[in-house]
Image: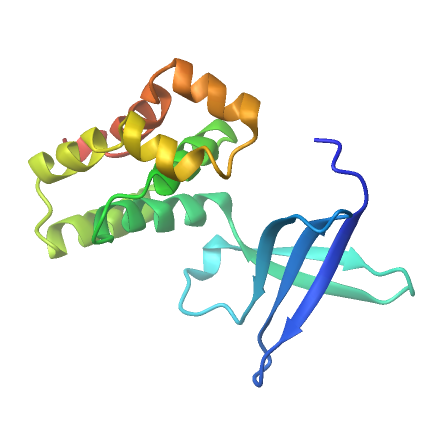
Length: 171
C-alpha cells in the first residue's frame, strides 16, 4: 500500500482498556485498534501472539482467530437492525484468507439462527440488500480505489456469493 511512515496515537480510558489510532504520516486516520479484555469467547478460538518490543521486553497478545471473527461477522450480518455492506465485505475478505467455520462454530451460528427464528427467506432478503447503492454508500469511502473498482465492476456479486456460501445450509 506504500503508506509511508505510520503514526500511532494512544487514547487511554479510566479503565484498563484503551485505543490506538493508526494514521498516515500526513495525519489521515486509517484504523483504530481497541484494546480490551476479551469478553466471553470460545477458548479454543483465541490465539497467542508473542511479540518483542524495541527495549527487549516481550509480551503475549491474545486475539480471536479468523474463524471466530467470521462467526462474529456472520452473526452481525443477520442480527443488525439494518444490513451493513461492511459485514458482507469482511465476510468475503475472511473467506479469501481461508477462514472457515468449524463444526463447533457452525453449531453456534445455527443456535443464533434458530433461537432468533431467522428463516431462509430472511437470510436471502438480507443477502439481496447487499446491492450497488448500499455498497457504494458504505464501501467506496473506506476501501482502496482498486479494491472498490473490482467489486463495483462485478456489481458486488463476490460479496453476495460469499454470503450465500456462508449461509448455504440455512438457505
